[in-house]
Image 1 (tube, rainbow, N blue to C red):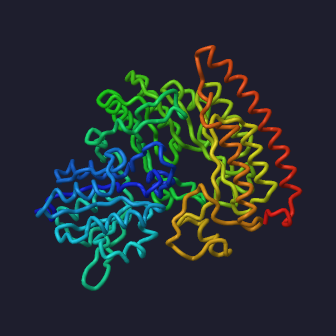
Image 2 (image 1 turned 90 degrees about the vertical axis):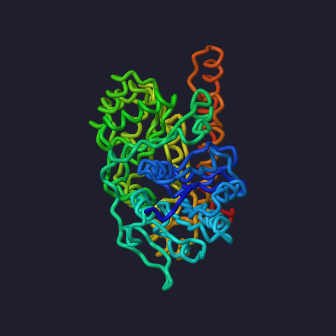
Image 3 (image 1 turned 180 degrees about the horizontal axis):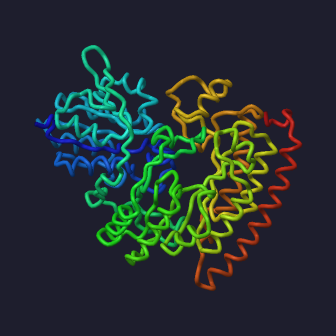
Amino acid sequence: MMRYEKVYVINPPSPPGYVSNKDSMGGFGQLFPVGATLFPPLDLIYLGTYLIEKGLPAEFLESLSMELDRDRLIARIESSPGERVLAVVRTSAPTLDNDLAVCRDIKANRTNVEVLVYGPVVATVAARIQKEPCVDYIVKGDPDETVAELITGSPKEAPGLCYRNEFGWFEGPSKPFNKDLDSLPFPKWELLPFQKYQMPKSSVHANVPFLPMWSSRGCPIGCHYCPYPVGQGLPWRHRTARNVVDEIEHLVRDLGIRYIVFRDPMFSLNQRRVIEICNGIVERGLKVEWRCETRVDYLNEATLTAMAQAGCEGINFGVESSDVAIQKGVGRRPISREQFVTCVETCRRLGIKTFAFFIIGLPGDTVRTILETIGFAITIKPDWVQFTAASPFIGTKLRAWAISHGFAAEDEYSYINSHEVWMGNDHLSKRQVKALYHFAKFFQTYLLNRKGILKQPGKSLLYRVPKWFVDRACDVLAFATFRCGSIWFERATPETGIH
């Protein structure tokens, strides 16, 4: 017997003025300006699919692709009068308050609706969620089996489930992460208007429909600033190569997908598995482009060659700091500058685009180390760069460090993204970090990424010639601007306002 006659798996509308990407930052989420790429929470699609495959009465309400504002979302839920309804709401760090407001609207004056909240950030902000009378259940960890057990009327003490009773909140036993990822059904994207998810022209050669995939979860490196180990755990859990290629074939041949974004924290931790995936793509004749995220020290030339032959169009990797001592100080297994240079050059030769991430203001950073990192970004010339500010995400070791040093308040309700400066460090004030961060962002926006203008490889001579001149001009401007800016920063004193 089922406890509910209808289950809605919900990604609430974005907060006003933003587009939410709840899949970003290890599922902790980020907010982007209106017009940004729509990116669905992958765990939401997995959850809904799992429930449907179990024969449970689940339906997606993914507000981004379905263009549901709050009123339309509530109207969809109200279309089930008299039925016992479970609203399963995916939340994230920067959208938490907005999502809880949506939960209040869902529950308002409706005795037939119960609300469940889940997401990677939930375990670290449970006390905040439990203050909301509208929330009946919280799931910590992978939600699939726990939600299914709740729907089918199994005991509320299901692992990972917290629920409200007459005495307050009861917390069931902790739930380990799912290790058998091959057992999960392929996401049922066909139940959504998935064509709305499109890579922008600034990232690929044209607006291209894409879908995300997980081939593995978890990251054993455990960098102190990273939310991935908090949300997905340290153990690396992976799907077999054949299972991954089977899903790629389904996306390409059944849904017509031409671009895939792998959302693994560490796609190439096992390079033999990556080569098996690539060989499978080639052997089955699958025409698809894709990108992934990984570390350069888990990429050798043989792996990169196989990836290029199988349609790998780009690789995201973290540099964070060009100073190995800074890397080591934040729990990151150090990677030398030479390794980054070699990887970028190999990718360029194979036609794979590189997207390098850098962090400004990590513990131990000084004016000198930050300038060296900016200079390194200019020198190695990845196709795309992203500078973010060191952010004390809830649950990370960086947050604990920031609190212990007085750089962050001991307040679990400070929901953070990485595109604002939130703290100083042991050498720099918050204002100094902010000035250096804006300096880095200038290069990112205008000289390195230049808003996507003439950034793609072009076959036409009419495109390649002006691109060559713009590339050279931006190189000269970048080095000249960096030199002048570095002199200014190095000579700056508190009296100049950078303090």
